[in-house]
Amino acid sequence: MAIIVKNIKQLVQTENKNIKFRAGKEMENLPVINNAFLLTEGNKIKDFGKMEDFSPEILKKIKEPIEEIDATGKFVFPSFCDSHTHIVYAGSREVEYIDKIKGLSYEEIFKRGGGILNSALKLHETSEEELYDQAWQRLEEMASFGTGAAEIKSGYGLSTEDELKMLRVIRKLKETSPITIKANFLGAHAVPLQYKNNPDEYVDLIINEMIPMVAAENLADFVDVFCDKGFFTTEQTERILMQGIKYGLRPKIHANEMACSGGIQVGVKYNALSVDHLEYTGEAEMQVLYKSETMPTVLPGAAFFLGMPYAPIRQMIEYGLPVALASDFNPGSCPSGNMQLIFAMGSIMYKMLPEETVNATTINTAYAMDVHRELGSITKGKIANFFITKPMDTLYFMNYAFGSNKVEQYFLNGKRQ
Image (tube, rainbow, N blue to C red):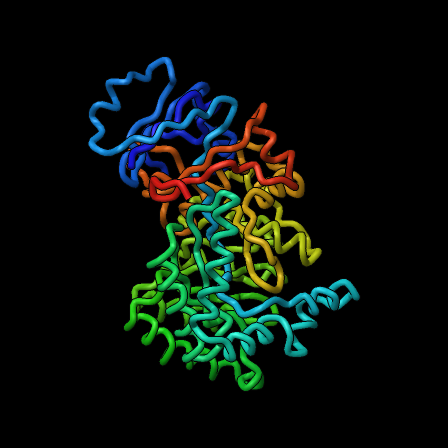
């Protein structure tokens, strides 16, 4: 099925050639076309441009049925890319949320067996089928808010058996969901209680058993470590990343959420695709990131939900860095995958311009999960993942109306969902 969307009030994030990402002052640059059309064929973007340049002759070259959509008064965006999620989990953790309200910190809850350890226990007792069903519902909700690609991490297994179980669920989601999915092995999400007094023994298990088995089944695209205060040290992180690289897994890092942990420096040293969280980021970290190939990724939902300091996004952009925004959808620190909300939080919490938040949730997050060649912009030949908004006066309404769903219709792989 081909699709022709006509009379688009504004077609957003249009690119005539592939770009990796936008950084620094360039993040204010957002190519748009007013009164536009968009043509897809199969699962790809075929053509786009101004309505005044549209000719019905274009459609005569299409060899499949064509659906025509009138988007008068509406905007068309490339689908969001959510480069940091943990959506394969069992059940929720709202009791811990009440503990947070009463004043307990994330670190305190973790130390008494809550947090990630609580999710690991629930996951161990849940079947692959039930984990798949729960994750599928979360993916459906994410898509309804405009997400077309997601990176999904393991990390609630914390044993070889359960980490592999999680990754097999992610593989099944990859095979069945219209959303583009990347898998991330995060065995180093926390130290299990049985290794509390000897965390290096758990690191040995990750290196000597988990990573080889993950690679043998081709279950992951990336390897990740929670390199932060109270979790994994920089030395432990380096050991895990080196083994992951040996087995063909590109590094990513949870870094500097709790403190200036050195995680950003380790990530850049090993050419991590992204370093994520970044609440504690100073000039030393920005200097390391500058001109690297590592995408700084901020997770506004987690900082908001946990009441944490906000990452210095304005300073990062002024320093010349690119910034990506992702959801961190998980049961403990951000129980939401609504990328429209993350988009708005970029402006509300971090004073990002709307143009910057578009770049941060599309092309930059596409780079952060290594799908920027296929997704993240309206470009000929890219996968036709896009959404049509409800009628809006300006693009800025996306940031302004943070409590409502502005998506009217969404399309993944060239198909209406």
